[in-house]
View 1 (cartoon, rainbow, N blue to C red):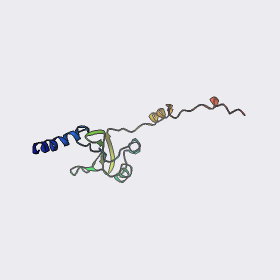
View 2: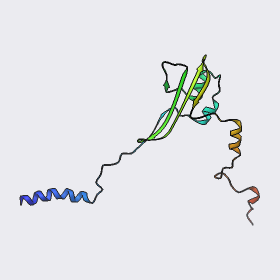
View 3: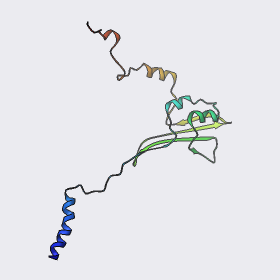
Length: 139
């Protein structure tokens, strides 16, 4: 009787688990945003000759500051889910005599011509019927 009881005790968990997916539970992966958010509007507002306070108002205070070069501000922004990096942007701003001299990075300011050309392109999602295509209801 004892060997039968041991066999049942050993086989019972195996039979119960065989109907279920046996694996480790998945952990929810959260999107992690790190650094300063950098948008095209912010980059468009940057102009050489701006003071440090004006730049800090537009871009925010930099998360990364070089202690050996106080005339360089680095902005880094990344979005990561689990181990996959979906977006990563970098900007470096250089100051001379406490005014913005130049900036480089993944984004460049748009020109007025580029803005006008982008506005001229019709957005198919916003397009609706033209006024001459709309017929008033009868009645």
